[in-house]
Image (cartoon, rainbow, N blue to C red; front, side, top):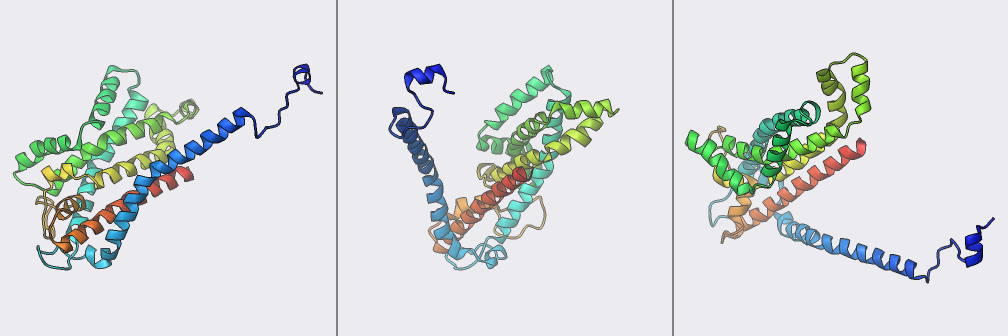
Length: 291
């Protein structure tokens, strides 16, 4: 039975295509889709332009050969690709353990303490520091003390860059675990440390892995930190304590080169970096979806 209000006013709950509210809603929907399309135009333009210029030069041989001398054709960026893996690997070994330990302290053991507030504040400040400043800091701490540019120095700079991202994402992931899990574990006789390591941390692992992948993607494409620390090398690395070529530095140097072969390698290297970021983003989405 209709309510008296609707019976007297003659209003209906059916949607009217010609009503002002429906027209306004449809117009705003169209505007939202247009804005989303405009936001995707720069990304699509970069992807298409890099793909057109770099795909033709991207062959398996470029991952196995050294950069060509100025004026010569052919060659590849095998040493730079290996150098990127070395520096990012060293950065991961430094940043991931400390980042997760710091996140565990902030979310599980140091809540509402002055030390935790200080660490949170410093983490937020560090996440906003320009990467070139981090590179200068790593140069002063590692390069000047060891007397040489190296993959270790580059890894240290990238680790400092990755650390705030890992700490913040891991802390948020741990805090998102329901308190009922902790209470149930403690009620069964587990200590706080056992509860954290065996219950809370495994539950938050997918989100933590997502944050780590995003930090790795950012570190692999950074140029400023490696300018001051890893420098560049046109040959294969024999030790970790020598100048090391990276993909970002190779693109930075070869993109402005007057030689066509080096420009082609710069475009191919750009495509590799874009694909690395794309792959890590897809992996992070898969981890979240599985969770």
